Image 1 (cartoon, rainbow, N blue to C red):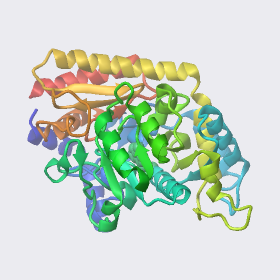
Image 2 (spheres, rainbow, N blue to C red; image 1 turned 90 degrees about the vertical axis):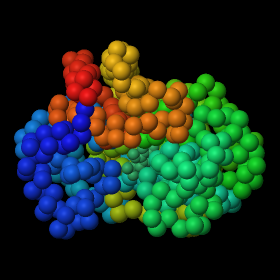
Image 3 (tube, rainbow, N blue to C red; image 1 turned 90 degrees about the horizontal axis):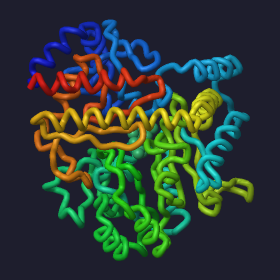
Amino acid sequence: MTLDRDLSEYMSKTARSRALHEEATAVMPGGNSRTTTFFDPYPFYITRGQGAHVWDADGVDRLDFNGNYTSLILGHAPPEVVKAVQEVAVEGLSFPGPSEHEVRLAEVLVRRVPSLESLRFTNSGTEATMNAVRAARAFTGRAKIAKFEGAYHGTHDWALVSVSPDVKAAGGRSRPKPVASSAGVPPAVLKHTVVLPWNDGDACEAILDREGPNLAAVLVDPLLGIGGVLPPVEGFLDRLHTVTQRHGIVLVFDEVISFRIGSGGAQERFGIRPDLTTLGKIIGGGLPVGAFGGRADIMAAYDPRQGRARISHGGTFNANPVTMAAGLATLNSLTPDAYGRLDALGERLRGGVARLLAGTRRKGQVTGLGSLFCLHWTTTALTDYRSSRPKDVEAPIRVFMGLLNEGIVLTPRGLGACSLAMTDDDVDRFVNALARVLARG
Ligand SMILES: Cc1ncc(COP(=O)(O)O)c(C=O)c1O
């Protein structure tokens, strides 16, 4: 598994992408508009996606286990979603006012998620978590927020803290220090952010008891998705719920990724009723989307009917009809049978990878839940951000590149998702390709 050999094979197959990237760098810094989708030496440019496959600008066909970072739960261009988009688009792309599509998608979400008494739409998960933080501050009158080390909640300032910090700069394991995850995050943000260690109930309770009176919100991705899909240990989320209630802290579940594990998301699976929830990705059926909502008394700050709303929330494209229709068509396809099928695909993949790793000398593990999975290149017991850091820091990118050359797309850090467009054979193809990548080392 040498990176150099894989890189030269990748470059030999992607001449047109290389040329497009050169043109792109002339007009965009790094040739790119998404930090997450860039990798060295250049990303492949995608020209088409259909079902479980994507094709790049050189015509290379790859099986897509990335699914636009877990958004495409039905696969690429599902006919029912494309049809809904086409029918709505001919009637107008966006309007200077609401449409019925927005009401219908909101109704479906409220029916699926009992804690969502009331909600609003945004254009991204970033805007959803930004608004949840603001709503919690407005409701409690407190300034600080808490988040978990290793958790990703988008790219606004309040979320860009301790996402993947250098452990040497991040304090002790049970009392992590806030570390800016981007240039430009001002010191005031760090002063108002408390960082929690994932899956350590005692440490979290001690921190929250100390900081409770100053905390507006605890922001929780219940699966620590981008942090490596590390599900909560038994009782951990219950304990967070109890402690936040004790201190009047707004408990926000960021289900932008975890909503895909079941009809009511992770909160249904783990039996927790958060105060607020943020959503994104799958609820837009492949188009830009986000939503936030929860307790009606908290969301009332957005209600403009008694004069001005206490919180201003605009957005030229919020709840545009095309996104709403795509989201509705997607959710309507996610029946109980569909979730059963997604779970079965995820279990087959994780089982296959675990058996493969048990039979090789590679120090790896696979985690996940439902259709989500993540490869880890360490044998340390996986509980939190720190334990999931690879011993061999180059391993994730070597595996990513090796899989690309085998015709499989994952995320560079090893996160992946099965879609309903996949078959058992597709999943087995993933496992066999990974076996060949590992054997080449
Ligand atoms: C848990 C979580 N929250 C928020 C976001 C941000 O969503 P978006 O990329 O739509 O801004 C992401 C994106 O991956 C996410 O995983």
